[in-house]
Length: 433
Image (tube, rainbow, N blue to C red):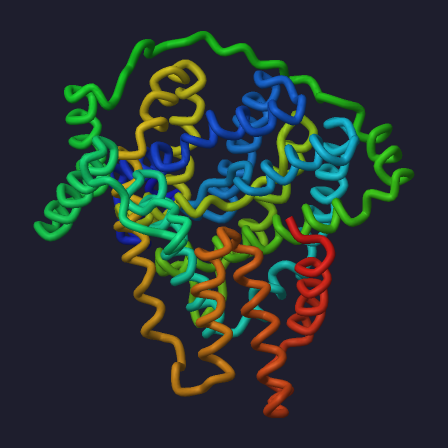
């Protein structure tokens, strides 16, 4: 049944690979179950309601992605945008319910755009060289996250960044984890990343780095809406919060678009630069964002950590379905999941190695053409250095349009590129997160 439903043979995969890939993706992204409630509770949203909203959003988005698009991609509340929300709550004077209503309004627009050809056309409008740049940039981005989280790379006021203390247990255990996974990959052992993470986790436990005080817990979930969306939306409109709505919409739109391009390219699920079943995939995160905004969280995005499951061999929606299953289990294993997600030495090696895999697309960029090469280059450095997929893509769009216009190569510019270049300029100058 699963073979026919997810077309495993057609995608050259099997049940064991898909399930193990789902588990790897879960461990790579499970930190959001802890971090999102921690960030948004600072804005005044009850912590248990954020946890509920996070779970609901993940399940809705990921299940639509699994059955609708048959993609190994997980959808979850996005990092960065939740911090922006918390900052707005602390500095703007707006209460969290009104701010959530701006997320709701943005999500409704998001659903409408996804139901039409617009978002699909947007993905198709991005030049191939920019898509290759986005994929490589996100690879650098997640590798940098792994290096930062494990303190291999640390901030330095004189040189900006520098090598961390290699005697730090988290740091040297991460390096050990990298070597373990690399050796398994070199030996072509199936599920090398998952096995390497498991071995590292066991070593961390016996060396005292991983502390598991409690394994099981009984979940408490309130499934009612956190606020009246109609009343609060009218309130947000009367207060003129259009700029906030626009910012939520733009960041969510391009974070997901960038991730979709990168992960589908890595998995070999795009053909001639086009993503098959793009509409179904885009509907997944738009409906997840809508649910998140109603239950108590900021908008969702396709998660770049999905690339960890893809790197393990995950190719179909069964990987995403498996991750959803582990998310449900995590309701009862929340204490254990929190413990595992809190040890960077377990997850960072996978992120760093996956980042290296995604650099392959750099070879496809037309480096001899400055109008194609520089926009890709500025995207590649922009995403990891700003820590924002949205900002990196914005730089790439702006330079691409300007350079093509300077050479009068108007035919190379899709009409949507003009529209979003203008919107990106507005956002970067006046509405930046």
